[in-house]
Image (tube, rainbow over all chains, first blue to last red; front, side, top):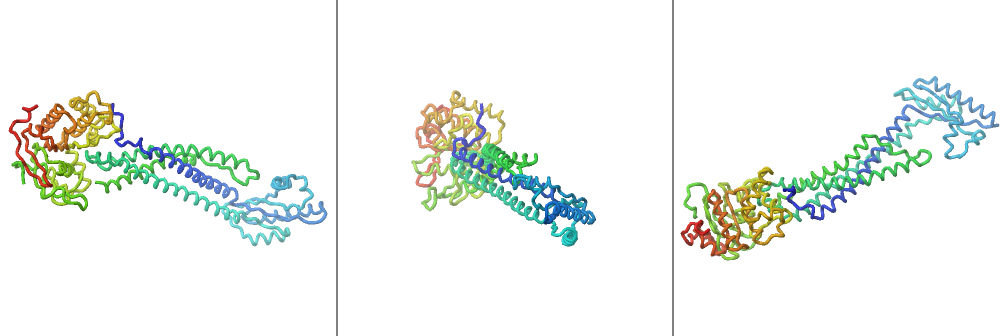
Length: 298
Length: 240
């Protein structure tokens, strides 16, 4: 019998049509930015885990007649491994064979058949014990004595630059989410003020029959919550296929230059909660706006 | 100041009240009166005399430019905003232009004061149709105001004003859009409420209606208020 549960005709005003789409755009942007931040976190973790406690030693190839040079190069590699294994803190030192080096060079050279004839530098993969910090200049000097022109590639050096860049991008993405939140709140405040103007005569009647400000504010808040949920769901619905497409495209790049978008289950849950968070934000913004505005009304 | 000669506290008391809109002239000047509980007054005067403005001060739509307004023993001229809803719930107001909510059904319009006051849906479902039946709108419970005639809207507005048994009923031209038969029936409703203890003030320029009841008149002329005795001595129920 009494089907109408809101006293204000929100369904008839322009806000009901415009607000969900504004929220949808905001949630779309927030989802993309947030998934970027979360994916970066995963990638940085993985990089950190993969290269912490490791280093690579590069041994330059000997020159001369191919067979002789190969033997000399192998001799240098063996000497360097011996130096490494006698260095305190080194857990293992594993030279990469030509086949493995060929695999690393394949994306650039195309064929590994030429490798046997080319003076290719050799690599030694070194693993350190947990938490060990080596005296790199001293190690480099000892290695050079055993194998001329040996060089140490400490992953931490380039990784720290990469990590710094990653953290910078992560902060940027978080800032974007923050800005989207601010923009959403501003949109809701504007829409609510417009709604107050549109429904002023109804609000006056409600006041005249004894409605408290909060009675009216609750109705605006509920309307904004529902519009926010609707818009948020649309935004998330548009963002997810976009994310999957980006992930698929990243997976198709060769050489592993761009890591796959690998979010953890908790991250997907966080993304799924975005529409709820935005709707809640819309609800609170509307309620506070109405309270502030009604104080100025009679 | 006219007080109705009652020892009990007044429901409404005006002391040297003036009202002006913006920088304009005073619409109401030095208005002083007091209405006793369960009294019944007509508010008369020519168009533009300030009847609606006087009523609006009583239903707290505006505050006086000067003077003191007291409702139910409480100074409302300077009361905090947060205190007003509780006072307004003790009032029933019939607006001249009805001010029904067009998007709500008749049922929901009349239920509004009860919902605002937090009355249970069960009680609302019981009392609202009863009252609407009494004012002759039983067949229009789910209709929306725009589909009703002026007289029907007026009856809905009156039903909304009286549904919560107000202590003070203020009506601005409540019989302006209905024929004499319906007007008498609505007046009867007001009289019944008055007999139950509601203080009633009815603004009207319908002299025929005023002349048929033995209630005192508050007459506004040029911004000043005068109390006039009833036109006749008959009891109102004799006329219905």
